[in-house]
Length: 159
Image 1 (cartoon, rainbow, N blue to C red):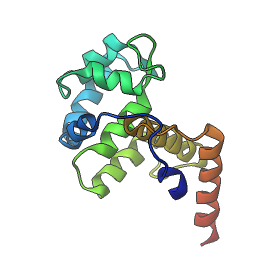
Image 2: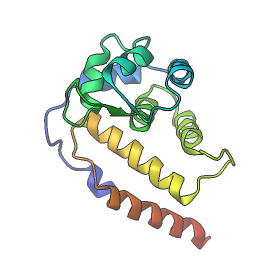
Image 3: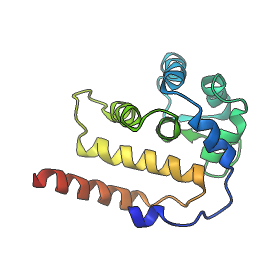
């Protein structure tokens, strides 16, 4: 995975967006998640209007962030909820341990305190793809990320 992340951006990216994300806190993100859970609990993808409703408290201009996360970089279509949440959390200004715990909890769907292999695959797919979109790198294929999850589990099981 390290080799993949050393690639040059496929296109120019707006560093001011990542700077804005670094100024966000997980507390602010949790407030957005409250709106998400109360008003859009069944949504796995968000339209721009939904995205704006949820994230306008933490973004001066939610449109920019939506376009970066939307595959065609348009206000039409949708963005993935988990890519969005994971990317915001990882880029936030929090300490690594807090970010990792947040992302872990976000994808521990059965809330058993562990990540099953399927949860790990979804974690990698969502987090890496969201991060890549913000820095202009073409994201790896879903298969590549699933294979990475297999490798991680093999290393963990080796112990």
